[in-house]
Image 1 (cartoon, helix red, strand yellow):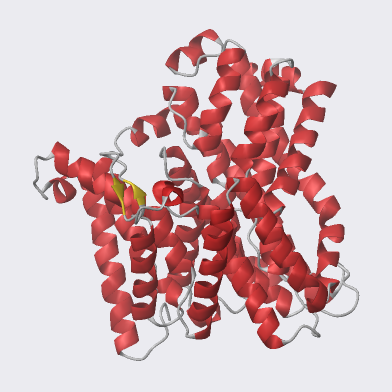
Image 2 (spheres, one colour):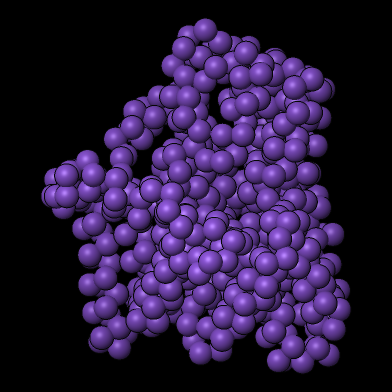
Length: 497
Protein backbone atom coordinates (compact mmCIF):
# COMPACT_ATOMS: atom_id res chain seq x y z
CA UNK A 1 0.00 0.00 0.00
CA UNK A 2 2.87 2.39 0.79
CA UNK A 3 4.33 1.75 -2.66
CA UNK A 4 0.97 2.38 -4.32
CA UNK A 5 0.57 5.70 -2.49
CA UNK A 6 4.09 6.69 -3.51
CA UNK A 7 3.26 5.69 -7.06
CA UNK A 8 0.15 7.84 -7.02
CA UNK A 9 2.31 10.86 -6.16
CA UNK A 10 4.41 10.24 -9.27
CA UNK A 11 1.35 9.99 -11.52
CA UNK A 12 -0.59 12.89 -10.01
CA UNK A 13 1.40 15.58 -11.82
CA UNK A 14 0.11 17.80 -14.65
CA UNK A 15 2.33 16.35 -17.36
CA UNK A 16 1.40 12.70 -16.68
CA UNK A 17 -2.30 13.54 -16.46
CA UNK A 18 -2.14 15.57 -19.67
CA UNK A 19 -0.39 12.73 -21.49
CA UNK A 20 -3.09 10.29 -20.39
CA UNK A 21 -5.79 12.59 -21.79
CA UNK A 22 -3.90 13.24 -25.05
CA UNK A 23 -3.25 9.54 -25.54
CA UNK A 24 -6.90 8.65 -24.96
CA UNK A 25 -8.15 11.21 -27.48
CA UNK A 26 -5.65 10.04 -30.09
CA UNK A 27 -6.49 6.40 -29.41
CA UNK A 28 -10.25 6.86 -29.65
CA UNK A 29 -9.96 8.76 -32.93
CA UNK A 30 -7.49 6.27 -34.44
CA UNK A 31 -9.58 3.31 -33.29
CA UNK A 32 -12.74 4.77 -34.76
CA UNK A 33 -11.24 5.28 -38.24
CA UNK A 34 -11.31 2.02 -40.24
CA UNK A 35 -7.90 1.17 -41.64
CA UNK A 36 -5.89 2.95 -38.98
CA UNK A 37 -4.75 0.73 -36.15
CA UNK A 38 -3.56 1.10 -32.58
CA UNK A 39 -0.10 -0.49 -33.06
CA UNK A 40 0.58 2.08 -35.80
CA UNK A 41 -0.44 4.96 -33.52
CA UNK A 42 1.66 3.62 -30.64
CA UNK A 43 4.66 3.16 -32.93
CA UNK A 44 4.38 6.73 -34.26
CA UNK A 45 4.00 8.17 -30.74
CA UNK A 46 6.87 6.11 -29.33
CA UNK A 47 9.71 8.53 -30.25
CA UNK A 48 7.77 11.43 -28.68
CA UNK A 49 7.78 9.68 -25.32
CA UNK A 50 11.58 9.42 -25.21
CA UNK A 51 11.84 13.08 -24.18
CA UNK A 52 9.29 12.70 -21.38
CA UNK A 53 9.61 11.20 -17.93
CA UNK A 54 9.09 7.42 -17.83
CA UNK A 55 5.60 7.66 -16.32
CA UNK A 56 4.46 10.54 -18.58
CA UNK A 57 5.73 8.80 -21.70
CA UNK A 58 4.13 5.47 -20.84
CA UNK A 59 0.93 7.31 -19.82
CA UNK A 60 0.53 8.58 -23.37
CA UNK A 61 1.10 5.14 -24.88
CA UNK A 62 -1.29 3.47 -22.43
CA UNK A 63 -3.91 6.13 -23.25
CA UNK A 64 -3.57 5.36 -26.96
CA UNK A 65 -3.81 1.63 -26.22
CA UNK A 66 -6.94 1.85 -24.09
CA UNK A 67 -8.65 4.52 -26.19
CA UNK A 68 -7.92 2.73 -29.45
CA UNK A 69 -9.17 -0.62 -28.18
CA UNK A 70 -12.50 1.02 -27.31
CA UNK A 71 -12.62 3.44 -30.26
CA UNK A 72 -13.22 0.72 -32.83
CA UNK A 73 -16.70 0.21 -31.40
CA UNK A 74 -17.83 3.72 -32.41
CA UNK A 75 -17.75 3.17 -36.16
CA UNK A 76 -18.83 -0.45 -35.65
CA UNK A 77 -22.01 0.67 -33.88
CA UNK A 78 -22.79 3.77 -35.92
CA UNK A 79 -22.06 2.70 -39.51
CA UNK A 80 -21.33 -1.05 -39.18
CA UNK A 81 -17.69 -0.49 -40.13
CA UNK A 82 -15.44 -1.89 -37.36
CA UNK A 83 -12.55 0.44 -36.61
CA UNK A 84 -10.54 -2.46 -35.16
CA UNK A 85 -10.71 -6.22 -35.81
CA UNK A 86 -12.08 -6.90 -32.31
CA UNK A 87 -14.90 -4.39 -32.86
CA UNK A 88 -16.31 -6.63 -35.58
CA UNK A 89 -17.92 -8.67 -32.79
CA UNK A 90 -19.48 -5.47 -31.40
CA UNK A 91 -20.91 -4.64 -34.83
CA UNK A 92 -22.98 -7.83 -34.89
CA UNK A 93 -25.54 -6.35 -32.48
CA UNK A 94 -24.42 -2.74 -32.11
CA UNK A 95 -25.07 -1.82 -35.73
CA UNK A 96 -28.47 -3.52 -35.58
CA UNK A 97 -29.41 -1.43 -32.54
CA UNK A 98 -28.50 1.69 -34.55
CA UNK A 99 -30.79 0.55 -37.36
CA UNK A 100 -33.55 0.21 -34.76
CA UNK A 101 -33.01 3.81 -33.62
CA UNK A 102 -31.14 2.85 -30.44
CA UNK A 103 -27.62 4.02 -31.26
CA UNK A 104 -27.24 5.76 -27.90
CA UNK A 105 -28.13 2.58 -26.05
CA UNK A 106 -25.46 0.61 -27.94
CA UNK A 107 -22.82 3.32 -27.49
CA UNK A 108 -23.49 3.64 -23.76
CA UNK A 109 -23.28 -0.09 -23.17
CA UNK A 110 -20.16 -0.27 -25.31
CA UNK A 111 -18.48 2.43 -23.21
CA UNK A 112 -19.57 1.20 -19.79
CA UNK A 113 -18.75 -2.42 -20.58
CA UNK A 114 -15.33 -1.34 -21.86
CA UNK A 115 -14.64 0.69 -18.72
CA UNK A 116 -15.69 -2.14 -16.40
CA UNK A 117 -13.55 -4.58 -18.38
CA UNK A 118 -10.58 -2.23 -18.15
CA UNK A 119 -11.08 -1.73 -14.43
CA UNK A 120 -11.24 -5.48 -13.77
CA UNK A 121 -8.09 -5.89 -15.86
CA UNK A 122 -6.34 -3.11 -13.92
CA UNK A 123 -7.18 -4.75 -10.58
CA UNK A 124 -6.07 -8.14 -11.86
CA UNK A 125 -2.76 -6.66 -13.01
CA UNK A 126 -2.16 -5.08 -9.59
CA UNK A 127 -3.27 -8.02 -7.47
CA UNK A 128 -2.35 -11.11 -9.48
CA UNK A 129 0.48 -10.12 -11.82
CA UNK A 130 3.00 -12.67 -10.60
CA UNK A 131 0.59 -15.65 -10.06
CA UNK A 132 -1.03 -15.02 -13.46
CA UNK A 133 2.35 -14.93 -15.14
CA UNK A 134 3.31 -18.25 -13.55
CA UNK A 135 0.06 -19.79 -14.81
CA UNK A 136 0.59 -18.31 -18.28
CA UNK A 137 3.92 -20.13 -18.39
CA UNK A 138 1.97 -23.40 -18.44
CA UNK A 139 0.27 -22.38 -21.69
CA UNK A 140 2.31 -24.02 -24.42
CA UNK A 141 1.66 -25.08 -28.03
CA UNK A 142 -0.77 -27.90 -27.09
CA UNK A 143 -2.87 -25.54 -24.97
CA UNK A 144 -2.84 -22.84 -27.69
CA UNK A 145 -4.06 -25.41 -30.23
CA UNK A 146 -6.80 -26.72 -27.94
CA UNK A 147 -7.95 -23.21 -27.04
CA UNK A 148 -8.14 -22.38 -30.74
CA UNK A 149 -10.22 -25.50 -31.39
CA UNK A 150 -12.57 -24.57 -28.55
CA UNK A 151 -12.99 -21.07 -29.94
CA UNK A 152 -13.62 -22.45 -33.42
CA UNK A 153 -16.41 -24.71 -32.13
CA UNK A 154 -18.22 -21.56 -31.04
CA UNK A 155 -18.63 -20.63 -34.69
CA UNK A 156 -21.66 -22.84 -34.68
CA UNK A 157 -23.07 -20.73 -31.88
CA UNK A 158 -22.42 -17.59 -33.90
CA UNK A 159 -24.22 -19.08 -36.90
CA UNK A 160 -27.64 -17.83 -35.75
CA UNK A 161 -29.28 -21.22 -35.60
CA UNK A 162 -27.43 -22.93 -38.45
CA UNK A 163 -24.31 -24.63 -37.19
CA UNK A 164 -23.51 -26.15 -40.59
CA UNK A 165 -23.31 -22.75 -42.31
CA UNK A 166 -21.28 -21.43 -39.39
CA UNK A 167 -18.78 -24.28 -39.65
CA UNK A 168 -18.52 -23.78 -43.43
CA UNK A 169 -17.80 -20.09 -42.91
CA UNK A 170 -15.24 -20.90 -40.19
CA UNK A 171 -13.53 -23.47 -42.42
CA UNK A 172 -13.37 -20.87 -45.19
CA UNK A 173 -11.64 -18.48 -42.78
CA UNK A 174 -9.12 -21.19 -41.85
CA UNK A 175 -8.46 -21.79 -45.54
CA UNK A 176 -7.82 -18.10 -46.22
CA UNK A 177 -5.36 -17.99 -43.30
CA UNK A 178 -3.09 -20.54 -45.00
CA UNK A 179 -2.18 -18.25 -47.93
CA UNK A 180 1.31 -16.72 -47.94
CA UNK A 181 4.45 -17.74 -46.07
CA UNK A 182 4.55 -20.94 -44.03
CA UNK A 183 4.95 -19.74 -40.40
CA UNK A 184 7.48 -22.46 -39.51
CA UNK A 185 9.45 -23.21 -42.68
CA UNK A 186 9.23 -19.85 -44.45
CA UNK A 187 8.15 -21.50 -47.72
CA UNK A 188 5.62 -19.80 -50.00
CA UNK A 189 2.26 -21.51 -50.38
CA UNK A 190 -0.90 -20.70 -52.32
CA UNK A 191 0.62 -17.50 -53.72
CA UNK A 192 0.07 -18.54 -57.39
CA UNK A 193 3.17 -16.62 -58.39
CA UNK A 194 1.68 -13.30 -57.27
CA UNK A 195 4.31 -11.28 -55.39
CA UNK A 196 1.70 -9.35 -53.39
CA UNK A 197 0.37 -12.63 -52.01
CA UNK A 198 3.65 -13.46 -50.25
CA UNK A 199 2.31 -12.07 -46.98
CA UNK A 200 -1.11 -13.67 -47.37
CA UNK A 201 -4.40 -11.79 -47.40
CA UNK A 202 -4.16 -8.46 -45.59
CA UNK A 203 -6.37 -8.77 -42.52
CA UNK A 204 -7.44 -5.13 -42.63
CA UNK A 205 -8.58 -5.63 -46.25
CA UNK A 206 -10.58 -8.70 -45.25
CA UNK A 207 -12.23 -7.01 -42.24
CA UNK A 208 -13.13 -3.80 -44.06
CA UNK A 209 -14.25 -5.75 -47.11
CA UNK A 210 -16.66 -8.18 -45.43
CA UNK A 211 -18.10 -5.45 -43.21
CA UNK A 212 -17.75 -1.99 -44.80
CA UNK A 213 -17.95 -2.83 -48.51
CA UNK A 214 -20.57 -5.52 -47.93
CA UNK A 215 -22.62 -3.00 -45.92
CA UNK A 216 -22.23 -0.42 -48.68
CA UNK A 217 -23.50 -2.93 -51.24
CA UNK A 218 -26.44 -3.71 -48.99
CA UNK A 219 -27.17 0.03 -48.70
CA UNK A 220 -27.08 0.27 -52.48
CA UNK A 221 -29.48 -2.65 -52.75
CA UNK A 222 -31.91 -1.19 -50.19
CA UNK A 223 -31.85 2.22 -51.86
CA UNK A 224 -29.77 5.34 -51.36
CA UNK A 225 -32.72 7.53 -50.45
CA UNK A 226 -33.24 5.99 -47.01
CA UNK A 227 -31.64 7.18 -43.81
CA UNK A 228 -29.85 5.21 -41.18
CA UNK A 229 -31.99 7.03 -38.67
CA UNK A 230 -34.10 10.14 -39.11
CA UNK A 231 -34.49 13.03 -36.73
CA UNK A 232 -32.47 14.33 -33.83
CA UNK A 233 -30.95 11.89 -31.40
CA UNK A 234 -30.80 12.89 -27.75
CA UNK A 235 -29.00 10.68 -25.27
CA UNK A 236 -31.66 11.49 -22.68
CA UNK A 237 -34.43 9.93 -24.80
CA UNK A 238 -35.83 6.65 -23.40
CA UNK A 239 -34.82 4.75 -26.54
CA UNK A 240 -31.19 5.66 -25.87
CA UNK A 241 -31.16 5.00 -22.13
CA UNK A 242 -30.14 1.70 -20.58
CA UNK A 243 -32.95 0.23 -18.51
CA UNK A 244 -32.64 -1.52 -15.18
CA UNK A 245 -33.59 -4.81 -16.82
CA UNK A 246 -30.85 -4.42 -19.43
CA UNK A 247 -28.29 -3.76 -16.72
CA UNK A 248 -29.58 -6.80 -14.82
CA UNK A 249 -29.02 -8.97 -17.89
CA UNK A 250 -25.68 -7.44 -18.84
CA UNK A 251 -23.82 -7.18 -15.54
CA UNK A 252 -23.25 -10.97 -15.20
CA UNK A 253 -22.16 -11.03 -18.86
CA UNK A 254 -19.70 -8.17 -18.27
CA UNK A 255 -18.29 -9.85 -15.17
CA UNK A 256 -17.76 -13.19 -16.89
CA UNK A 257 -16.39 -11.64 -20.10
CA UNK A 258 -13.99 -9.42 -18.15
CA UNK A 259 -12.59 -12.42 -16.28
CA UNK A 260 -12.13 -14.38 -19.50
CA UNK A 261 -10.60 -11.32 -21.17
CA UNK A 262 -8.05 -11.01 -18.38
CA UNK A 263 -7.04 -14.63 -18.91
CA UNK A 264 -6.81 -14.17 -22.70
CA UNK A 265 -4.70 -11.03 -22.24
CA UNK A 266 -2.28 -12.76 -19.87
CA UNK A 267 -1.52 -15.43 -22.49
CA UNK A 268 0.95 -13.98 -25.03
CA UNK A 269 -0.19 -14.02 -28.63
CA UNK A 270 -3.98 -14.25 -28.32
CA UNK A 271 -5.19 -10.64 -28.18
CA UNK A 272 -8.38 -8.59 -28.08
CA UNK A 273 -10.04 -10.02 -31.21
CA UNK A 274 -9.90 -13.57 -29.87
CA UNK A 275 -11.31 -12.38 -26.53
CA UNK A 276 -14.15 -10.40 -28.13
CA UNK A 277 -15.34 -13.27 -30.33
CA UNK A 278 -14.83 -15.94 -27.70
CA UNK A 279 -16.89 -13.99 -25.15
CA UNK A 280 -19.58 -13.18 -27.69
CA UNK A 281 -19.91 -16.86 -28.58
CA UNK A 282 -19.99 -17.99 -24.96
CA UNK A 283 -22.61 -15.38 -24.08
CA UNK A 284 -24.83 -16.35 -26.99
CA UNK A 285 -24.52 -20.02 -26.14
CA UNK A 286 -25.44 -19.41 -22.49
CA UNK A 287 -28.34 -17.08 -23.26
CA UNK A 288 -31.96 -18.17 -22.82
CA UNK A 289 -32.81 -16.24 -26.00
CA UNK A 290 -29.93 -16.80 -28.45
CA UNK A 291 -32.21 -15.97 -31.36
CA UNK A 292 -31.96 -12.29 -30.40
CA UNK A 293 -28.20 -12.19 -31.00
CA UNK A 294 -27.32 -10.57 -34.29
CA UNK A 295 -30.64 -8.75 -34.17
CA UNK A 296 -29.86 -6.12 -31.55
CA UNK A 297 -29.07 -8.01 -28.34
CA UNK A 298 -27.52 -5.57 -25.87
CA UNK A 299 -25.80 -8.49 -24.14
CA UNK A 300 -23.81 -9.11 -27.32
CA UNK A 301 -22.39 -5.58 -27.19
CA UNK A 302 -21.61 -5.97 -23.47
CA UNK A 303 -19.81 -9.30 -23.96
CA UNK A 304 -17.70 -8.18 -26.90
CA UNK A 305 -16.62 -4.84 -25.43
CA UNK A 306 -15.91 -5.98 -21.88
CA UNK A 307 -13.95 -8.97 -23.16
CA UNK A 308 -12.16 -6.75 -25.66
CA UNK A 309 -10.98 -4.10 -23.20
CA UNK A 310 -10.27 -6.52 -20.35
CA UNK A 311 -7.27 -7.62 -22.40
CA UNK A 312 -5.53 -4.22 -22.23
CA UNK A 313 -3.99 -4.28 -18.74
CA UNK A 314 -3.64 -8.07 -18.64
CA UNK A 315 -1.23 -7.99 -21.60
CA UNK A 316 1.24 -6.22 -19.29
CA UNK A 317 1.30 -9.23 -16.94
CA UNK A 318 3.78 -11.29 -18.97
CA UNK A 319 5.65 -8.12 -20.00
CA UNK A 320 6.26 -6.80 -16.49
CA UNK A 321 6.86 -10.13 -14.77
CA UNK A 322 8.61 -12.17 -17.46
CA UNK A 323 9.75 -9.59 -20.00
CA UNK A 324 7.57 -11.25 -22.65
CA UNK A 325 5.17 -8.91 -24.52
CA UNK A 326 1.54 -10.03 -24.45
CA UNK A 327 0.69 -8.60 -27.88
CA UNK A 328 2.00 -6.39 -30.68
CA UNK A 329 1.28 -3.16 -28.78
CA UNK A 330 3.13 -4.17 -25.62
CA UNK A 331 5.98 -5.38 -27.83
CA UNK A 332 6.26 -1.82 -29.19
CA UNK A 333 5.94 -0.35 -25.70
CA UNK A 334 8.80 -2.57 -24.54
CA UNK A 335 11.04 -0.11 -26.38
CA UNK A 336 9.77 2.73 -24.18
CA UNK A 337 10.56 0.74 -21.03
CA UNK A 338 14.08 -0.03 -22.20
CA UNK A 339 14.85 3.53 -23.34
CA UNK A 340 13.93 4.80 -19.89
CA UNK A 341 16.15 2.21 -18.22
CA UNK A 342 13.32 -0.05 -17.06
CA UNK A 343 14.05 -3.66 -18.03
CA UNK A 344 10.83 -5.71 -17.62
CA UNK A 345 11.18 -8.94 -15.72
CA UNK A 346 11.24 -10.24 -12.13
CA UNK A 347 14.06 -7.86 -11.17
CA UNK A 348 11.92 -4.85 -12.10
CA UNK A 349 9.69 -5.42 -9.07
CA UNK A 350 12.68 -5.57 -6.74
CA UNK A 351 14.80 -2.77 -8.19
CA UNK A 352 12.10 -0.35 -9.40
CA UNK A 353 9.23 -0.99 -7.00
CA UNK A 354 8.07 2.65 -6.93
CA UNK A 355 8.01 2.81 -10.72
CA UNK A 356 5.91 -0.37 -10.92
CA UNK A 357 3.50 1.05 -8.34
CA UNK A 358 3.28 4.32 -10.28
CA UNK A 359 2.57 2.34 -13.45
CA UNK A 360 -0.25 0.46 -11.71
CA UNK A 361 -1.83 3.72 -10.49
CA UNK A 362 -1.45 5.24 -13.94
CA UNK A 363 -3.43 2.35 -15.44
CA UNK A 364 -6.28 3.05 -13.00
CA UNK A 365 -6.22 6.78 -13.72
CA UNK A 366 -6.26 6.10 -17.47
CA UNK A 367 -9.45 4.06 -17.02
CA UNK A 368 -11.08 6.90 -15.04
CA UNK A 369 -10.07 9.49 -17.65
CA UNK A 370 -11.29 7.16 -20.39
CA UNK A 371 -14.79 7.21 -18.92
CA UNK A 372 -14.87 11.01 -18.68
CA UNK A 373 -13.47 11.74 -22.15
CA UNK A 374 -15.48 9.11 -24.05
CA UNK A 375 -18.74 9.99 -22.29
CA UNK A 376 -18.24 13.71 -22.98
CA UNK A 377 -17.75 13.09 -26.70
CA UNK A 378 -20.57 10.59 -27.16
CA UNK A 379 -23.17 13.21 -28.14
CA UNK A 380 -20.99 14.30 -31.06
CA UNK A 381 -20.34 10.75 -32.25
CA UNK A 382 -24.01 9.82 -32.25
CA UNK A 383 -24.91 12.61 -34.68
CA UNK A 384 -23.39 10.55 -37.48
CA UNK A 385 -26.57 8.43 -37.39
CA UNK A 386 -28.41 11.33 -39.04
CA UNK A 387 -26.47 10.90 -42.28
CA UNK A 388 -28.61 9.76 -45.21
CA UNK A 389 -27.61 6.71 -47.22
CA UNK A 390 -26.90 8.85 -50.29
CA UNK A 391 -24.13 10.50 -48.27
CA UNK A 392 -23.16 7.47 -46.18
CA UNK A 393 -22.56 5.16 -49.17
CA UNK A 394 -19.71 7.18 -50.75
CA UNK A 395 -18.27 7.99 -47.29
CA UNK A 396 -18.10 4.29 -46.41
CA UNK A 397 -16.41 3.46 -49.73
CA UNK A 398 -13.97 6.37 -49.39
CA UNK A 399 -13.07 5.43 -45.81
CA UNK A 400 -12.64 1.82 -46.84
CA UNK A 401 -10.32 2.53 -49.76
CA UNK A 402 -8.33 5.14 -47.84
CA UNK A 403 -8.07 3.00 -44.74
CA UNK A 404 -6.76 -0.04 -46.59
CA UNK A 405 -4.27 1.95 -48.65
CA UNK A 406 -2.93 3.86 -45.62
CA UNK A 407 -2.60 0.62 -43.68
CA UNK A 408 -0.95 -1.49 -46.38
CA UNK A 409 0.33 1.03 -48.96
CA UNK A 410 -0.79 -1.40 -51.65
CA UNK A 411 -3.29 -1.00 -54.49
CA UNK A 412 -3.49 -4.79 -54.64
CA UNK A 413 -5.09 -4.86 -51.19
CA UNK A 414 -7.78 -2.46 -52.37
CA UNK A 415 -8.81 -5.09 -54.92
CA UNK A 416 -8.62 -7.71 -52.16
CA UNK A 417 -10.94 -5.56 -50.05
CA UNK A 418 -13.44 -5.25 -52.90
CA UNK A 419 -13.31 -9.01 -53.49
CA UNK A 420 -13.98 -9.78 -49.86
CA UNK A 421 -16.72 -7.14 -49.93
CA UNK A 422 -18.54 -9.07 -52.62
CA UNK A 423 -17.97 -12.29 -50.68
CA UNK A 424 -19.38 -10.70 -47.51
CA UNK A 425 -22.40 -9.38 -49.39
CA UNK A 426 -23.14 -12.82 -50.87
CA UNK A 427 -22.66 -14.51 -47.48
CA UNK A 428 -25.17 -12.13 -45.87
CA UNK A 429 -27.60 -12.61 -48.75
CA UNK A 430 -27.55 -16.41 -48.53
CA UNK A 431 -27.57 -16.64 -44.72
CA UNK A 432 -23.90 -17.47 -44.06
CA UNK A 433 -22.61 -15.60 -40.98
CA UNK A 434 -19.52 -13.46 -41.49
CA UNK A 435 -18.24 -13.67 -37.90
CA UNK A 436 -17.06 -17.33 -38.17
CA UNK A 437 -15.09 -16.40 -41.28
CA UNK A 438 -13.16 -13.81 -39.28
CA UNK A 439 -12.70 -16.14 -36.31
CA UNK A 440 -11.26 -18.83 -38.57
CA UNK A 441 -8.92 -16.33 -40.21
CA UNK A 442 -7.72 -14.95 -36.86
CA UNK A 443 -7.27 -18.31 -35.17
CA UNK A 444 -5.88 -20.13 -38.20
CA UNK A 445 -2.19 -19.30 -37.60
CA UNK A 446 -2.49 -19.97 -33.84
CA UNK A 447 -4.12 -23.35 -34.40
CA UNK A 448 -1.70 -24.36 -37.14
CA UNK A 449 1.46 -23.33 -35.31
CA UNK A 450 0.20 -24.79 -32.03
CA UNK A 451 -0.56 -28.11 -33.71
CA UNK A 452 2.73 -28.38 -35.55
CA UNK A 453 4.87 -27.30 -32.60
CA UNK A 454 3.01 -29.69 -30.30
CA UNK A 455 3.62 -32.56 -32.72
CA UNK A 456 7.32 -31.69 -32.79
CA UNK A 457 7.45 -31.71 -28.99
CA UNK A 458 5.66 -35.06 -28.79
CA UNK A 459 7.54 -36.57 -31.76
CA UNK A 460 4.32 -37.14 -33.66
CA UNK A 461 2.15 -38.41 -30.79
CA UNK A 462 -1.36 -36.98 -30.37
CA UNK A 463 -1.34 -37.99 -26.70
CA UNK A 464 0.16 -34.62 -25.77
CA UNK A 465 -3.23 -32.94 -26.31
CA UNK A 466 -5.07 -35.13 -23.77
CA UNK A 467 -2.34 -35.83 -21.24
CA UNK A 468 -1.85 -32.14 -20.42
CA UNK A 469 -4.79 -31.07 -18.19
CA UNK A 470 -5.37 -27.56 -19.58
CA UNK A 471 -5.29 -28.78 -23.17
CA UNK A 472 -7.62 -31.68 -22.36
CA UNK A 473 -10.08 -29.33 -20.63
CA UNK A 474 -10.31 -27.07 -23.69
CA UNK A 475 -10.86 -30.05 -26.01
CA UNK A 476 -13.53 -31.44 -23.69
CA UNK A 477 -15.36 -28.10 -23.70
CA UNK A 478 -15.15 -28.05 -27.50
CA UNK A 479 -16.66 -31.54 -27.71
CA UNK A 480 -19.47 -30.66 -25.30
CA UNK A 481 -20.24 -27.48 -27.26
CA UNK A 482 -20.56 -29.35 -30.56
CA UNK A 483 -22.75 -32.06 -29.03
CA UNK A 484 -25.06 -29.63 -27.19
CA UNK A 485 -25.46 -27.22 -30.11
CA UNK A 486 -25.90 -30.03 -32.64
CA UNK A 487 -28.47 -31.83 -30.47
CA UNK A 488 -30.52 -28.70 -29.92
CA UNK A 489 -30.57 -27.90 -33.61
CA UNK A 490 -31.48 -31.51 -34.37
CA UNK A 491 -34.46 -31.24 -32.04
CA UNK A 492 -35.47 -28.00 -33.74
CA UNK A 493 -34.87 -25.77 -30.72
CA UNK A 494 -32.98 -22.43 -30.90
CA UNK A 495 -29.31 -22.77 -30.00
CA UNK A 496 -28.69 -21.95 -26.34
CA UNK A 497 -32.41 -22.04 -25.38
